[in-house]
Length: 220
Image 1 (cartoon, one colour):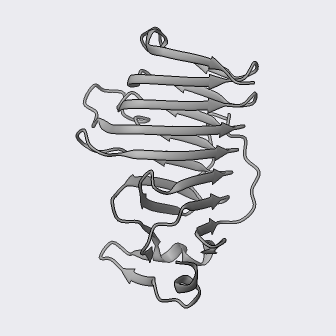
Image 2 (tube, one colour; image 1 turned 120 degrees about the vertical axis):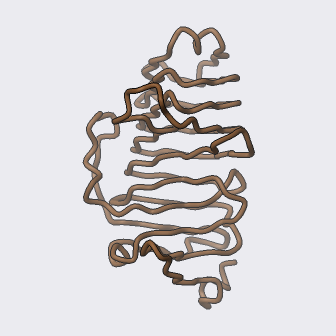
């Protein structure tokens, strides 16, 4: 994959009717790193590809980062992932279509993890560093008429990050590891099986329903 990327043989700039570009479509890397000054939507897919709007192309830098790795950067930025009101409207959106076969590292950004409209193989293997990570999304829609998103399995390793579990997310299995400066915020998410590893200073905001299902292990 690395050689083909260097030779430009699996890179395509295919403009869609909506003005989006498919920048990479090919063999899924073992590791995808996304960092700074971009907003990310993670969309479950059997086919690995990356899209962004053609007008934002100059703000996004990407390329191989090793033998089987891909890196996307929007520039250096310092954010406070624990701040409820993140300033993200000025940053370009990058859509990543992938699954758990690719380990995804998110650094210094806002990321939305999408699910499926009905139960299916939506699986994610994520590391979040200085990142605000949303599972599902219901902000701005306070009614009961919401579109549910289904996830089969989500693994998250959070380092100085905030994980927000929205109430439209239905997760079969959730495994989370939090360091001392990370937190989890449960907004009435539905989780069938939950495993939470936490450190002494981790912040946990969970509903009673999910506390009853929780298997907790203290991280050393």
